[in-house]
Length: 485
Image (tube, rainbow, N blue to C red; front, top):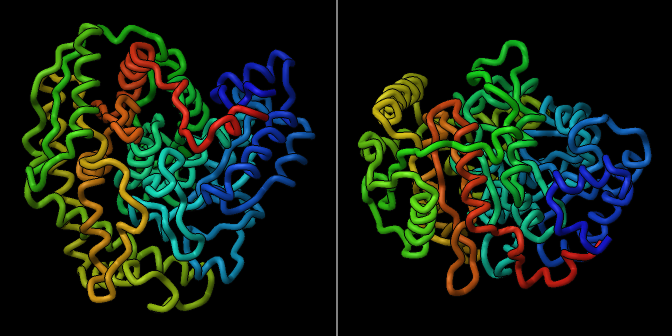
């Protein structure tokens, strides 16, 4: 059992299929690691171990990940009978639970996953760090004084520390890719409409938000996407159909590709940290060695100066909507004392926008998306960037000053500068752990493909993983504990 934590989810599932290990043994092993390491990390905030042990002892769906433990991010994807707080002290005080599985939770169960807990997230998933007042900060396993990123920071920390091989995440501006970069993981943001947000939602903030997972291997990312992709009837967006299972793209030859390299943040409003540039350049060198053509280039439309203000208009309107959503769902009013100061200030800003302002921002982003898409039509296959413009930040970096509760969202710009634009365009993008700083912090590089081309990302990501493997890198905090069952 000492090797279980070293295996990815695909490897764990293979052991179950071969009869070498039972689902119950996998689940009990993960629970033991959570009990040993979570007090230091604060990644898991809801213990579902009793339900998990019971589920693992019963017949499970014969899916591709039968018996593999999974952690659910405590945001958007709720599970029947379990706490659901979205980082809000307001919902924690109400001891709020959901009576039904979200559609994605059902898809995870059908794939054979067993839910062993829920992971920490910033309040309403707003910030690129995981330090909610409701549950306290999650610590980065590579440096406990630093953030694991956000908003899927609890999931990222748990996977990086080996508590589980795979954990759910979602991404509205970088919330899968930023934690993947900070924690040395694979983080794929699928195309808009690839994974349904139903049945609760048709879209979130007019299509900015997508669902997937954080994991340690490219084959896990591909295999899980196979299991959860597909539309529900009535979904407002449906991504182009895949040509074959994504797991079959893993190891397939992508052929020689033309890749644009961009290391300066859009608009050049600040400098990229040298380690983040080093991550992108390291990936570029490996891609060239693999036979791809890499050249300095990017869509000029990305530099449009209106982008940040219009993205924040949509984002803050979404926060205002989210508070109204929870007022309607709980039947209770939410005031300034019920949420964190920055959440309230951002919601107030969102309320100041008119409906015409919001629709104008969406229309502007649609025009911008068309301009950006032309770059891929004109002969480029991929765009390569740093995932973030700075490495993992110290905990407390986003603590707002009383006189400026909006400061945290503006402080977020360097972390989301390379990621958020592709939530706007709906394109798939993946962060890969290709660089470590002198202090031992992981730093990711991001690859972006044309809309609907997750297949291309998976092929190239698999090449990079094989050329420069990262699977044997483990945080020193974990030590032998993450490698024992």
